[in-house]
Length: 251
Figure 1: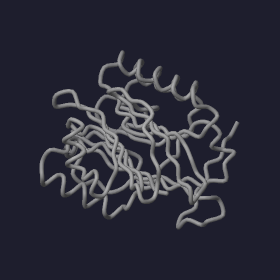
Figure 2 (figure 1 turned 30 degrees about the vertical axis):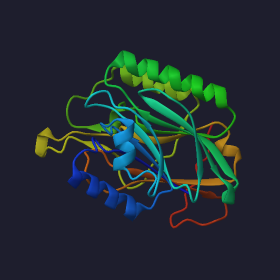
Figure 3 (figure 1 turned 60 degrees about the vertical axis):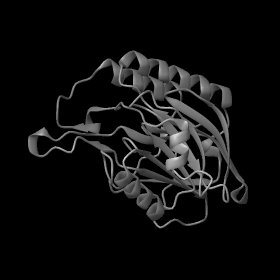
Figure 4 (figure 1 turned 180 degrees about the horizontal axis):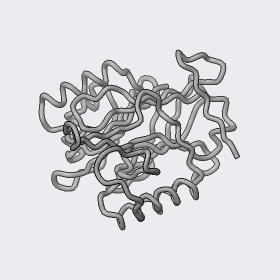
């Protein structure tokens, strides 16, 4: 099964929609997590083609900012919405042919530090409620974990980075490190003005290390947004992938 996460940075312009849909067709995911649609739920469902090809669960934007969506192929996977807020949405994913199930949390991090701290608290509570079930926490977290996750601009340790590290550690999150690139966002400027950061990622929580599963993440080519999309392939252990990668827990 293939998951895709992408901060599309708005889905209003027809030309941009065509670019992004072309990316969906090339990647062929079963589940798509979208951040920053900049759309209300009804418009998002219409523009993303819900009822024609996808099923969907959306969170309204606030004016011209925010907006979340989870899309899935109903012919392949069952997805049941659980709960949501303006910065996250949670669903239950069931793939019967693989005997696979998990909770999926799609995250769009806020800009203000205080709101980020509240977001970490919310997600920690969600994870505590569903443990030990496998949970995948994915999206644009608007935060980095180390200096190496940013290049260009001013690099300094800030409270947001420390709080994000604390959240990851206290929630026992394990990142599926994506191949194909070290950064997921760019300001698209040239030369000395260029800034890139790692803001988007996939985390695992719960008893993921007890399940006979292989996880492989990859940063994909950018198109239509200043964020790169990232895919996560989940398969049963023993079924070879083109580039096998199994996450292991180290003490």
